[in-house]
Length: 326
Image (cartoon, rainbow, N blue to C red; front, side, top):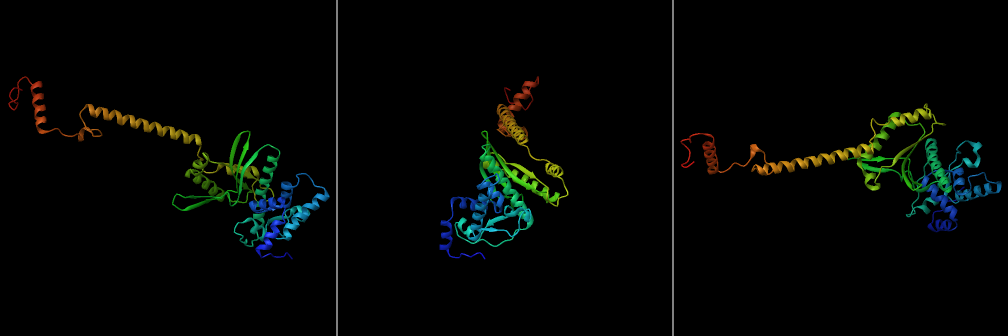
């Protein structure tokens, strides 16, 4: 039976006895939530097959972390009993949680479902593959966020809080270019309606402009589709086609630029029209911004003078009402 350490002194003693590799593995498990023994071996030992002595060393190191409650090993294996020790799945133990968190609080006991385990291990696999590509010098992983760190909260159209829950967020650099991705590990287990709601939530988050203001861009949404080993009735190709259909119309940055240019042109035309109109009204003696029907009326004496001048100019004989000398 695993001994339970309750005093902070015991926790500190365990922490001081851990190696740098132990701390790195614990931090990775804390970030990804669930990691298989095979993934830990590829991340911190070797991608190739290990010798018997190295395999025993890896098993001993993981067993020591489990024995001290730094890690917790799930009771079932991934891949069945034929997978051996490589099929074990690890999560943070109570001592590991107290070592990771600054508050020293204890984590709540939880028993993940089979679907949750496989989905989370798929995300851990993406992390492992990216780490190997970085080790080969092909990419540089600038940032990797797993759930729930990758989640985003924004204000909905009705003023309510909405939650976007991607499976991961990653920033990569390759050949001088940066790529920002939201990751969705799709195993074909979600219904079409649930998939549609997820895509529409991405669209609503895009329309808030939060990421565009923070990053100057909106991250691409990358779906990693694999329906093998799941109860999905769709093939990978059918699922990809369903995802690509998405909402009726996804926004395009080119459309946004065209709309912005058109709006700028309209503003310039309106400004030019108002300027020309002001110049015309000024030449006609109208107040700026007023229409001819609502122009300021001249004084009575001025109106009579204009009438006298007009009647004398257009008639051969002056009217009786004309002023003398008109």
